[in-house]
Amino acid sequence: MGGFLKDILGRMTRLWRRREERVWAIGDIQGCYDDLQALLRHIDFDPRYDRLWIAGDLVNRGAGSLETLEYLHAIRDRIHVVLGNHDVTLIAAYFGLKKSNPTIDPILASPRADELIDWLRSQPFLHYNPTLGYAMAHAGISPMFDWDQAVMYARRIEEKLQSSEARKWLKKMFQKGKGVFDPDGDEITLDRYIINSYTRMRFCDKKSGRLDYDQKGAPTKKTDRAGLVPWYRCKHRKPLPYRILFGHWSTLGYVETKKAVCLDTGCVWQGKMTARLLSGDGRIAQVNCPDGLEPGEGE
Image (cartoon, rainbow, N blue to C red; front, side, top):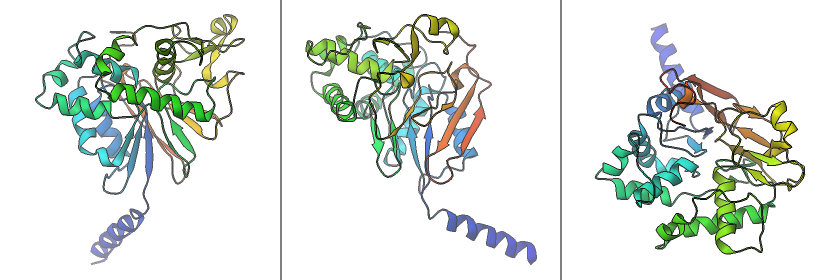
């Protein structure tokens, strides 16, 4: 009887604790569906009570891109997603603007392809919550944007991606550009800067604030000598009212400063998948991803 009562009390305690919603933020998934499920089991995620923030790159490279997209779509009322560069590339492949590959072929061949891509196109490039004090963007927020600009520019490209002219517009976006912010420049150049800053940014030039899209590794003495610093340490960075959650930078790994948190810990490269609690005690949870690609494979 003692064991029975202990079990009942344990269940009641867990149910009582469930009354408070937990909000978890997760880094890049990149189609690693089994690892995502392992992480969700590890944090005891329950979509009836909890919420997820996901920092983009839901698909590509991992073997379970379709399963990942279907699962997230199924719990879409309990998650907040921002678009990453791989998500945008999937949309471009759907429009016939980019070549497909074996990891996203199942999505494009699915009888639900239209539904899933339409849902993906409806996702933002920037999400924020004043109560929690966090904002999230896949690669971060350009150091040249103040908060009003960050919101305005994110909404600008969201509207274009969701419009009936999305294919025509997206076709013009797949160029790096010079990484220079010119709010008075031509429309396409500005749009290209905005979408690249939200989905592809890592480093910026120390002196000018120009974005560098070529360097993919972690900061080193070499990048420092080249005059490059992580975007969130750029001296030109405008003050923002939120701590920024971002992914995209697997070689950086988990980094947490007062202003920014990198959640991409390289699951797809046999690293880890990371979740951070945004409510409560802010703890970090991770699972190993032994079945990922060899680092550098398929880049």
